[in-house]
Length: 492
RNA sequence: GGUCUCGUGGCCGAGAGGUUAGGCAAGGCUCUGCAAAAGCUUGUACAGCGGUUCGAAUCCGCUCGAGACCUCCA
Figure 1 (cartoon, rainbow, N blue to C red):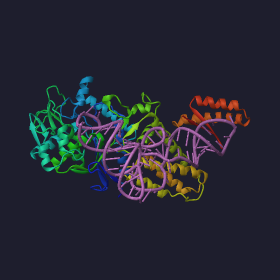
Figure 2: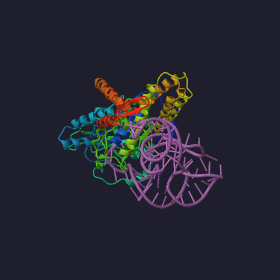
Figure 3: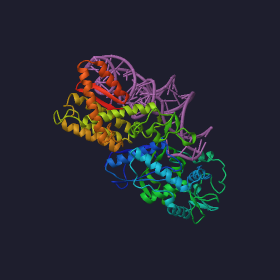
Figure 4: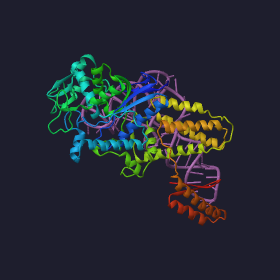
C-alpha cells in the first residue's frame, strides 16, 4: 500500500511500515496531563503526530487515532510518591479537580484546533477507564506480575524479568537502573526498587479516589495508557507515539504492563518526537522557560517580536525533522514565515495562471510528486518535502515567463499536488491576505480610486504626489507595488 | 556520577562513505522615476585531533562543547 518506513525507537532502526490489518491502522499517542496550559513543546509533539496521522490517511489508510487525556494518576514524581498533579492544582486554586481538568482540556483542544491539528478518533480519559484499569491489575496479579501491599498494588519487575527483558526501549540495563534509584519515602512497600505502582491507596487528604478490590485509591500513571490502548486498539496494534521524555519510565512501564497482562508489548512501532528547545534549553513549565502556543498568535511574549499565523508556526515546526531537536527563536520563525508566504504566493500565482501554453509542459509533475512522496516515506522527512515545494515554486516562476514549462494540464496537476502536500499533509491552512467579503470589496473599491489618482500623477511625472500617496498608504499598512502592468497593493 | 544523543556555511535546518539539500540573511544582475516586490544568480559548510579507506561531513578512537534521560514536564 505504501513504501513508508518509520524509525522504531524499540529496535533503533528504520523499518518498512506494515500494518497488522491493512488498510486499518491503529495509532496511540500519549496526550497531555491536563493540569496546566500546554506549551509550544507539547504542541510540537502533537503536531508531529498530526503529520503522521495526516500522511497515513493520505496514503489511504483508515486510521484509528487514540490520544488520551490524563486527568488523574499522574503524580508530581514518577517514583510513585507525591501529590496528584491535578489535585494539587485544584487545591492551589480552590477548585474541584474536574474543574481543572475541564479548563485545561478545553484549552488544549482549542490550541490543537488553532494549529489545525485534526482531532483524534478517540480521546479517552483516565478517569473514564478506571474499570478497565482495575481489570488489568487483576489480570497482572493473577499471573504473578503484580502484588498487593498495604492497599496498593505494584508491578513486580522481579517476576517480569524472569520472562521478559526490561529497559529495551530506553536502552538501559537493569544494573544501571538499579544503581540510579534512590531511597524515597513511600517506597518501603516495594519488593524491588524498580517496581512501580499500578494502584495507590489514597491517603486521607487525597480527594481523587475510586473504590477497588484493594483499597479506595487511584490508578498509577502508566496504567491508563496500557488499559486504553488495549481497549480501543487491541493487544497488538501498529503505532505508539509520544514525546521523547516519555520513553523512560512511562513507555517502558507500559510495555511491561502490556506484556505481563497480554503477552504482547502493545505497539509494533514506537515513535518518539524530539524536544523543542527555547534558548537552547528544554521548554518546561517548571523552569519558566516556556512559550505558550497562543502567545505566538498574539505576539505577546518577551521571546517574540511580533504575532505569527498558525500556518507559519506549523511550517517552522515541519521544516525540521520530528526526531531532531528544534531550537526556537523569533528570528528562525521569521525566516520560516517568509519562506512560507513565498510558497503561498507562488501557489496563488499558479491558481491565477492564464490558460496558455501547450497542454503538456517540459517539467515532469509526476516525477516531482513522486519525490515528495519519497521524502515523506523516509520516516516523514517533511524538511525535504518542503525543499521540493520550493523547487516547485521556482518552476512556477519559470512557467510565468515560458508557459511551455508546465503546460496547462501540468499546471493544474501541480496546483492540485501542492494543495495536497501543503494543506492536507502538512496541515497548513490556506491564508489569504484578504479579509472577509464586504470589507475586502470596499477596500478594493477605495484602492482602485487611490491608485488611479496616483497613476495619473505618475503619468504626469508628479513624483511628489505619487510618493506622498504611497507613503501615506504605507502608514496604514498598505504596501503599493509598481509593476510593468500597473500598480498593485497588499496589506501587511 | 550513570546511560544516551548531538555539534553542518552569518542564522535555521536536511543529508549521510564519492554527485547542488532547502529556507532566511548577504553580494551581484534584471525590472524600475525612486522605492518596494518579484525573478535570475553567487557562496563549497560539515567542532578539533588522529585512524580506517582509492576516497569521510558521513565509519572508528580521543579531546572540547551542548543537550536529553536517570529526578515532575511532549
